Length: 325
Ligand SMILES: NC(=O)c1ccc[n+]([C@@H]2O[C@H](COP(=O)([O-])OP(=O)(O)OC[C@H]3O[C@@H](n4cnc5c(N)ncnc54)[C@H](OP(=O)(O)O)[C@@H]3O)[C@@H](O)[C@H]2O)c1
Image (tube, rainbow, N blue to C red):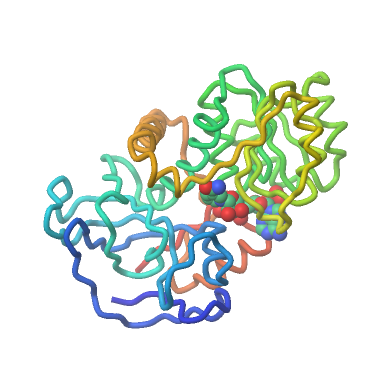
């Protein structure tokens, strides 16, 4: 097998395409021949040692991928060689083969494209857990999605619409806002050119959004939190903008509002049944055409470093998928 190997925490440019021994699945594991993997922002952080999860070196990055079961270890009975699967791995996706625990694998139903499977469980799972579980989103409420043209952002936009919410999609350019309208956003906000507080006031009749989905952080957080509705829920997803915001707590008091943390990886481990139920709903919605990964480009796996560079410079719309062959 071959894989992009991370041998030092010096970022994506230091990854090396390396021949490795093909691993045999241990008990409870299976080996997947990887067909496609997608890039997530945490893949940028993990190769620099800046992510919550720090795998021992050397490791193969790639948290979200899909492929075909090639071999199963002892005790794995519900998955068989030849089955198409999606994997939420944490690592291993940017190679030709990976051994993963059976609990990390979702069998792909017929009609589920491999490239969609490679951009689904992690991305949509995060946004579903955030909005539906942590945010307790209800039909008719207004959701503001920041970074709405990005990976988890575009998934959040679709999920909020599927749940019957009104969506204000916010992004850094008119092109990204136009994509969000194509994806079904009811209104958009370009936070590079428009005043955030005034625009949100105008778009919500002065009430503010009920739920805010924030994978960006930084300087946007405080003006957005100041705009939130009474009993609003501000979902802390991530800090792609770089800065971890600090808020004056009186703002939460004044709005009766909540700051709600979202940590999908830990949710998957701690609450496997709730995770499976959420994923089941997402697979059903995919079948009904309510959600579908927004794939900016399918690139050859050989071009992984170029994909990393596009994500680091905010050029991705939806997801980048890397494919073998
Ligand atoms: N909490 C969890 O469980 C969980 C799970 C998955 C991901 N995450 C987090 O969610 C965030 C987004 O992940 P993703 O995979 O969706 O990434 P992504 O596709 O790159 O989207 C991130 C968005 O953030 C915005 N952004 C603002 N400043 C940026 C900068 N300096 N560099 C890059 N992007 C910037 C960009 O939108 P604009 O250009 O429109 O501003 C971009 O579209 C990350 O922080 C990630 O760690 C959290």
